[in-house]
Amino acid sequence: MTENTVSTEDKFTADVSTFRNDALHRYELHVGGKLAVEVRFVDKPGHVDFIDTQTAEEFQGQDLAKVLVHFALDDVVAAGKRIIPHDPFTAGYLRHHEVYTQCIDWPEEAAPKLLGT
Image (cartoon, rainbow, N blue to C red; front, top):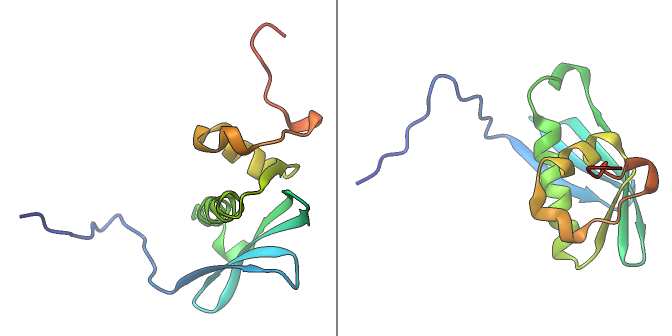
């Protein structure tokens, strides 16, 4: 039998919500009802262009932006669209998470460097 325990090092907050706000063209992560992180995007036919990620000052350093970017990327892939990472934070996340490789259209300025080039 396994038991789920919470370590004193875990900083999980049950009052976290993520969603896509189409009216404001952004994904949002809220903590306790406060907007903590937003990822702005442009929805294009067949693509979603990620353009900016912002974390509210009081929530910085908690890796919440990674949580929201993961949610946003999964949402785009589930919709059958491709990812364009103009946002430096999203591009950095994608460089470390190869699961999305087949769904990315790298803009020239954000493309990962190939060995030998």
